[in-house]
Length: 62
Image (cartoon, rainbow, N blue to C red; front, side, top):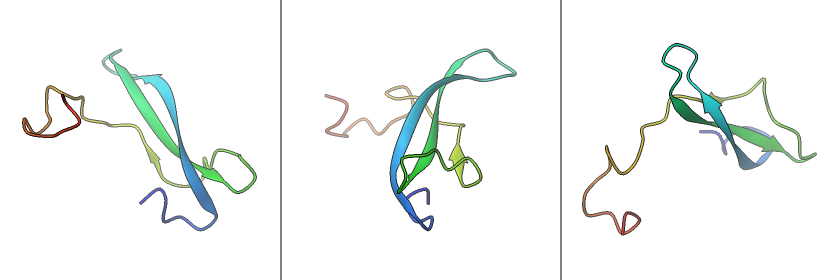
């Protein structure tokens, strides 16, 4: 969904911290053609950690 935004050419990943739990988290935001964060667009901030909750047979885990 992030990359489907009009004018989005990439995704930037920030280190973050969940405000309620203080757990580390990653924040994903689209990057515009000008290299700016698309903060008025889709922002993903509730990610599922890997490998704890990933498919066991994924080649990315090895």
